[in-house]
Amino acid sequence: MEKKLFAGNWKMFQNVESAQIFVRRLRSLLQEGKLPLAKAEFVILPQAPLLSVFAETARASASSGFAWGPQNLYWEADGAFTGELSPRLAQEFGSTFALAGHSERRQFFGESDASAAKRALAALHFGMTPIFCVGENLAERDGGRLAAVLERQCQALLELAPTMPKRFVVAYEPVWAIGTGRTASASQAEEAHLVIRRIFSAAWGEERARTLEILYGGSVKPQNARELLSCPNVDGVLVGGASLDADNFFNIAVQAFQC
Ligand code: PGA
Image (cartoon, rainbow, N blue to C red; front, top):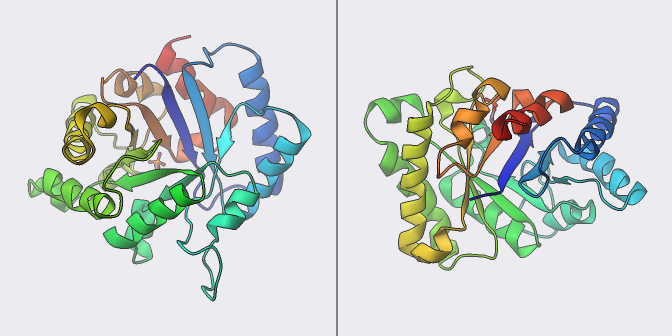
């Protein structure tokens, strides 16, 4: 895929002031014209209350040059679901993307394959593009179960989405590479992305699955972005720690396109 998607997962970092500084800086970097903007798309995934900072920016200028969305959302529009985020509310703040099934949700908050899939479907239903996260942990990789784990996680989604939506993004994030400084090699990423594309091809048809965007995530930084993004099946990156600073995040794309 010619165009690459750069998604920043802020996790439970940043506050109103630092988010405002980030937004201003990213916007001016994008306006400098250093990057071929037709080839790079940016999306930020902040904590839910910070979506308002992004919505204000959108109100203040016709085009901010990047998109945003929540790190998690529920599959009902409203109701007695304390602590969850309504997709309708996320949409009111201009969200056009939403993360679903991030490994930290799976590891620490009991997210299952089925609930992750329901969240991704809810994003679609409310007009947002899901970034559906999958990936194996170290024991699963060492036990030779990479393909089986990806198959299980993706099938939960495919059960609910038998045909390909207009746009769908999968993020392959090996749990052992998240926040550890240990990145998957380009060949490990490409291998996993191929497995994922085959799973979706079998369900959605080869032609449609070719337009599926598969991001790599796990300790992505400016120094390793180019190699990872040069893989034919790596359509973008999902960046945690290195997305918190606008210059650093932007630099990942600059390195990828070697501008
Ligand atoms: P990391 O996180 O880039 O800090 O490893 C990636 C993620 O969890 O999405």
